[in-house]
Image 1 (cartoon, rainbow, N blue to C red):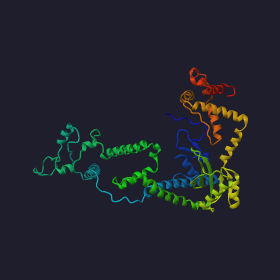
Image 2 (image 1 turned 120 degrees about the vertical axis):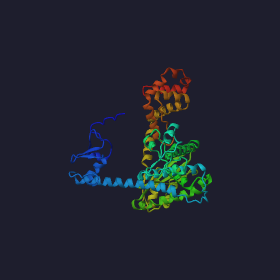
Image 3 (image 1 turned 180 degrees about the vertical axis):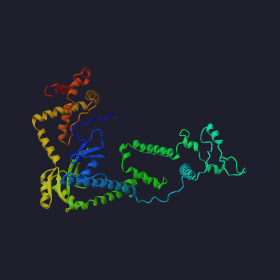
Image 4 (image 1 turned 90 degrees about the vertical axis):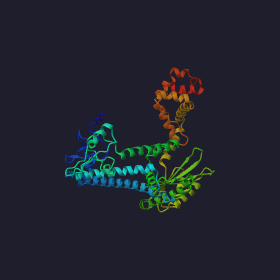
Length: 484
């Protein structure tokens, strides 16, 4: 498919380097510097090196201002740091998964089955054969072809090929015995080197292809039969598992369910704790924000999550089930937050963010004067929308939106019939815990307004039993009204 032409003046990407460069039409890798008008080959990265004065790949720009040069040099330096950090994290993760298990697996059996031994020997023989091939090509030795690997016509052709050498006596001048060990070791077919049609596939390629299919089938069987997410096949934890399994051999059995939850879970917890402790130097340098988030679970559980945010990333600290607490007052929240501050370390925390009343945050600041309390912005916006939704005019519209979505999604036939007109698009249904979802659901219905009108005016809908039901007729009145 041909590439679509970019709009005139539009940058090929959102890279900050395009502020000082122009794309050269007809060449995707050439960029024109707006300062010296030099054409830079190698893309936007080369342009930034050109402007930053980085030597080695491109000549430095002589017309760029010192401020721009300094800015780009800092950006390039920051990019290299981020790239190195990502690579280091990836290597640490793979190494931790690979070497994190120090369990005693017992004595392993070195005996292998005949198929594995034969396969390994075949691969080794292939490498030795190639080495002999190169050696004899250098020394100029003759070679023969041992029949049996190709067709009968090819076998007859190569039986007429001899290894007579000049200077031999008549007694030594004889045809090669193809069954002798020497002929088998010296077997080389010059014709096969010239003809691809007679060339047999490499043994290693065939084995690797079969091995990959076998491994893919085994992993897919585990994912499909255990109803696991398909993304596990691309998980960064999977390659180290396969590597460790290949190193220890198939005689070692995998862990039991008890070992996973009773032994290795504790070890993984300790490892994660050590990993979190590695963040504390930057916590001490920059400080952290303690975030408190409360929500209700599917069983009407009241859960309070505590997270720690820092420039290094956000870490989940712990979760508390407060369902059994009948009176969740400001004093209660102050008590658990005060306890979490002690667990993390008061010297690291500079700010506390909560999604509940301000009283507990004020109490925490009174006890720990260096802390600052802030309300959660998302929670504040949700409360604003709750207050807006409580107005009579707005509440009426939201109730009508709930009426439409509730009737449609209470019946399988109406859901399927609606999708015919919305082209498979679902209506977002209002949530229970967040008031913002009411307005999001209303927006979804407005987007599908024309499709819903066509649905309730169709002849098939009018003939259906759902159109004669009271709830269905109320929904039709809402959709057919001029205010909809």
